[in-house]
Length: 418
Image (tube, rainbow, N blue to C red; front, side, top):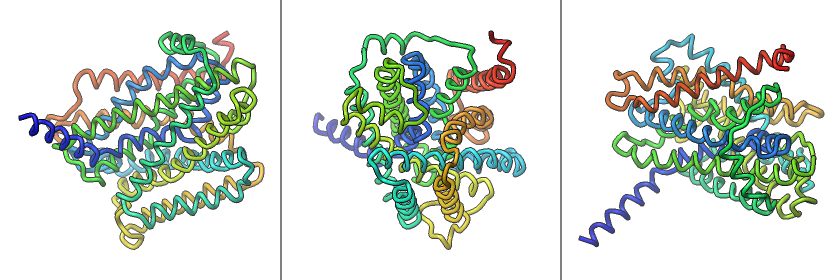
């Protein structure tokens, strides 16, 4: 009896390991160059005051990611595919156009992160960016889904660099923990934009499309879904723990010493005299890994979304000949993003930050379509949302809409908030 029980548990563990991947990968790419910059700015400019936002964001992220993973397992179709079939080509076109623009800005931001990380170690962007672009292009175009997933999972491990860097910054743990469970708010436009950026970079629109497409391409069925759900939940917790340590490291060092920064590179350089050269090196290495990681997945997510929405062939396991639009779009986004990054004096900082805000503005529209789809019993059968899931998802949607309206009003009519 005991032997059978042990074998059953081992069998479940090995099966989960065979399913694991899409949830952890998607959530960790959240902490890309734009995300790291946003978290660094939050810690440097507001100290620990923004840490509380990661608590509701984490629970909202789990609910949102679980929904799209469940839709992928039940329907066997990607999100943009479902939107096209249920809401028409015109709606899908405009939605994907907005996603394409936001994702291009995000991809530019990530290659800018590759450039910034290289400069931390004294390497020119004219070396790191082209080499990084060739590497990520070759990995996806020449690899299989299993190979690509293994490389992506390996990249997730290196996010521990931020946890170590945060510990080396020697923060006041009690103060940080209190700030994490004590909400605070301000109606200053810069504060509101930062909150939207925090939500936008943690719950990004592209994630929903990529996760559902990955679930479908990996062949995860509804009978296997309970294992995949654990993958999703674990990934959401891990990514926000990493985000917490980035904010904490910058709050304990940069904010405490009144040092203002504009980029994640500035944060890495400023950490050197405050937390030691090893902490700075780890922060810089983490930026390089995260940027290169995301620079491969953002164009991939876009290619999945557009091709599924337009009814074109897609998938990493296919050849260039079998899916020309898929690999052509992936290649084109990389080439265009690299070209923009290599332009002298290009406004990369502004583009990186605004891309995160654009994510926050686009997200409510994606969530509305997701809600309508996952509550459709014709599609989902008995796997529609529970009442609790609907409450959290709709609250997230309306909070983002409210924050966006407040941001616009506060930006153009700041006297209303004096």
